[in-house]
Image 1 (tube, rainbow, N blue to C red):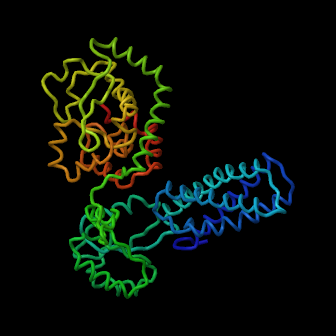
Image 2 (cartoon, rainbow, N blue to C red):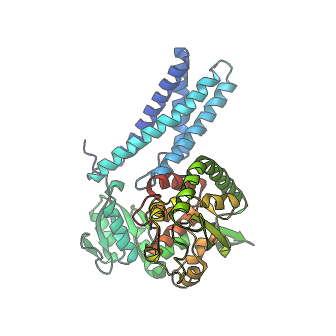
Image 3 (cartoon, helix red, strand yellow):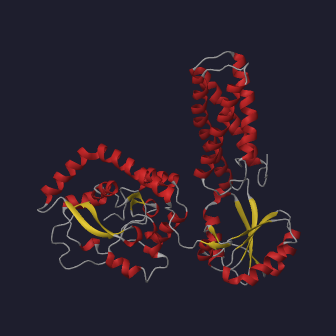
Length: 452
């Protein structure tokens, strides 16, 4: 079968995977809690009908090409829990249906496990197929600025998303590896001659409003899907929420995601997780404290003034890794390598074990487990004038770990990249994102070449 550009291939494969997952969930739950065969058949039929309808209703089978695996999995499992609730109500309300509560609970858990497994396997298979040139979708890009360059680079570096760029329109070519097709005035003629191209991506700055409007007017004559990819600043503008004020829609350009309910949720999350972690690692922290004390004279903890939420300062705790006089001559940005560090201190820095006392800061409410890393007041005063959007990182509490850290931007690395990650975290904050970052920190955040 040639699946080079088959649009039906992906959704059909997902449906087959979900049906297989439900079959395995039924089999597993009835193995654990045996029931008669008629109950098995009834459960399967009702489950297929309800899940098929509910999954389609909530958008489980919409195109996921290039989208986050976590977002896809979250929606699928949420839809499954919703389907199960409908099934449970049906079994409760229909008098001639009798199933054990234990069986329904087993079916819920088994469904979560098998649906997640089937989705992951299908996604891995599709990624492999697309990486090898199968199940692709042809697109053309219009534009020649930074957005177009970044877009072409991203598509080329992520073949698994399954997009094949046929070429680029614009004032000039921006990529030697991408065919230049001419000025955007020629795009409609090209599309009529190449019906295999199904998407057009307009990658231009919001400052080119008149040009963008003309391009979109031309594209009205085509049946292609049209997407607009603005420059980074423009994307942040249109990616913000809107608040109605006296009947006028206001764009929230710089807002904290920590409103009253989110603030409570974040605080509960931080306190519970920090308390559990501190109980688990307290014996280990005692050993580290002894190691610090034996490595050199001085206190166990090193307290440093840092800036957190709304620009407020606090004393951030670390296990001391330097000699007591290492900062006698002052502090400079990027000067970690020149500091006088003890042998034990070098070890706890390289493994990020010196950061463990910050869970005490979290318990006290000074920090969050996840958030932008805090900086010293002197550097905040410097960077807020040099890096666009720098002060927005203080719209949330500073964190022990964050999006920048799990992506390798830690220590004396590119500060602009770190701030970009911090702003991305603030704009897209959710409890699920926090848990994802905490999980990935275990594998990416402790030991890193940039930890000094």
